[in-house]
Image (cartoon, rainbow, N blue to C red; front, side, top):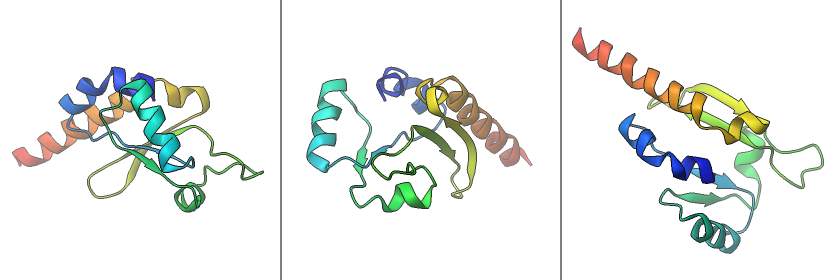
Length: 109
């Protein structure tokens, strides 16, 4: 999530909203957000409902796998990065920029 904070201006420029979500408690997420200086919301999913719904909960259910989803304004998942790729903002930024480019093209018609 540190990389996403580091590139937050690029996401804003692409018209994207960054949200983090963790199965950790709200208090633990608050502390982590303070540590990294997060300016985007860091949501808590201690019941693991969202992690289950998105299929990212580990088999042991003790943790959620690292995954980045790019979801468009209609709620459609347009891009997924998993594992170490989810920690790099490059492809998520590209997917966000492509989404804005497509939106701009569509509005010209």
